[in-house]
Amino acid sequence: MQKSTVDLSIQPNRRAFLKKGVAAGAVGVGIGFNLLGNSTTAFAEDQDNEFDRRHQRFTRGDAALLRFAAALESLETDFWVQYNELGGVQDSEVPGGTGNPTYTGKLANLDADFAQYIHDNTDDEITHFTFLNAYLESKGEAPVNLDKFRTLPGSKATGSSGQLRLTNLMKLTLDTSWWTRYRSDANNPDLDPNFVFPQAVPDLHKGQFTAIPRTDADMEPDAHIQAIANTAAFHMPTVEQGGSSLYPAMALRATSVEVLRILISIGPVETMHFQTWSDNAGNAVSDPLAPLTDPTNGLTFPNLNVSPGGEQFQTNLIMPEPCPFLSRKLPKCSIIRPTETRGAAMSVVQFLTAMGLFTGQSKEFFRLLRDLAEDADNARREND
Ligand SMILES: [Fe+2]
Ligand SMILES: [Fe+2]
Image (cartoon, rainbow, N blue to C red; front, top):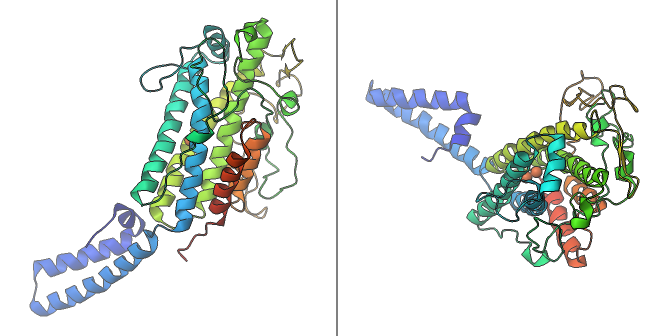
C-alpha cells in the first residue's frame, strides 16, 4: 500500500489505529484474531485509498492555480533581475549586469544590507517560477513561458545588462495604502471592501515614477537618484504584500493536498519579503533621509513620524495590527489581509496593470494574463 507523508500528517489518529491493527496481526495471537485483524486492516486500507484518491487528485483547477502563480512568478523574476543588475549582488546565483555604484549607494542609505536582500529576493523568485513550472510538467501540464513577450527596453544606465524585459520599472504609479491597511485595527478589506485606506506616500499614487536609473543622466542631482531608490523601496513591499494575499486566497481553491502544500509553502516567503521591505520602506520616510523632494519632478517622501504622524503612519510599527477577521462578532486577530478568494487572481492582474508594471506590453500579453487569471479564479475546491 502506498502511504504518502501528506496522508500520515493529516490523519494521525486513524493511522495510529491502523498501525495497531497491523501490529496485532503481525504478532499472530491466533488465526481467528489474525483474520479479524486483516479484515479491519482491509477496511482501513479502503478508507485510506479513498482518502488518497480524493485528496491527491490533481484537478484542472489545481493546474490553473499553479499556472497563474508561475506566470506571476516569471514576471516578478523579471523585475527583480532588473533590480539585481543595478542595485543587488551579481554572482553565479543571480547573474546579469554589473551593478550601478551610485544607485546601490542610495539603496544602502535605506539599509546597509539592501543589495544582499535584492539578490536573495531575486533568487527566491527564480526558484518559485522554476519549481512551479517543473511541478506542472511533472503532472503532464503545460508550463508557462512568457519569453515571447520579452520586448520592453530596460535601463540603459551603467550596470544594466541591456537585455529586453517583460516588465517596466520606469513608469510606476504605486498604491501605498497597504501601509495603513496593516496598521488599521478597525478595518479589514475583506469586511469593508469600500473602505479607502490612506496612502503612505500620496505622490507615488498620482504620477509616474521610475524605480531604477533609466540612463546615467539619472545619477544627479543627489535628491533625484535618492528619490528613485526610495521609489524602489516602496515598490518592493507593494508587490510582495500582493503575493502575501494572493497565495492564501488561491490556497482556498486547491483540491490536491499537495497543491495546497505548495501554495501555503511559497506564500509565507512572499510575506517574509513583504515584512523585510516594509521595514526598509520606513527608512525612506523617517529621519535622517526624510523629508525628501526630488527637484526634477516634485515627488516628495514625507517624514511620516512627523507628518501626518500617529499610529497609522509611525514607521517602526511594521508588525500587523490585529483587525476584525471573518466577523466583527469574533475577537480581532493579527492576520494577512485581504484573503478573500473570489476574483483574487484577476484583482492581482488589475493591481499590477494599474501600477504600470506592464506599460508597453502588447494586447496579446494582457489577453494571456487575463485568461490565466480567469482560469485560476474559476478553479473550485473539489474535495467536499
Ligand atoms: Fe515569488
Ligand atoms: Fe515575491
